Length: 209
Image (tube, rainbow, N blue to C red; front, side, top):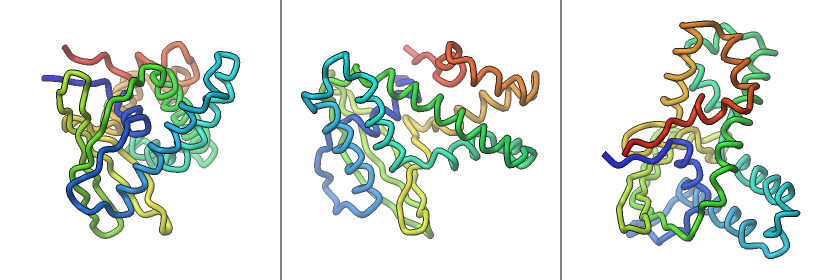
């Protein structure tokens, strides 16, 4: 089975060029497309392309992504049953660490962008939640299904999960985190998340061949 890393799915969400869908796009779809346009604008800005501007470029991309992804909701769902046992301070710390992990994984894969496209297939909205189904078109003309799950946060649609080939980003984190906590402790998970050198092995599995 073809499989992209789940972290790469986040890159697809914000780096691929949009192809018009056959159906009429609604607000959730427009949210994903708007994020796409903004990130591409940053990447294509001549003033930000030099290596000397890397820090500034990455900061702007992080800012764009933060407007469309609900990192707190993703962190909460990823920690699952262990979330309720955390103190307010621990929850705040975990969201920060989770966001940093996800952003680093995302930023580190940006330079691989080379004009791949994403086709928006359909949109479904139901009681405050939405699903935007797409497929990623690779350079080899392979089609990889990618679904974005969003929730209505006070009138604004925010992405809280990305599912690629029926494997969810949040579920992937949940499995990893659950395993570490049960085999060791929550403190050990936090320690690993603070260790930036472990980022990829902790939450970004190697793609299957």
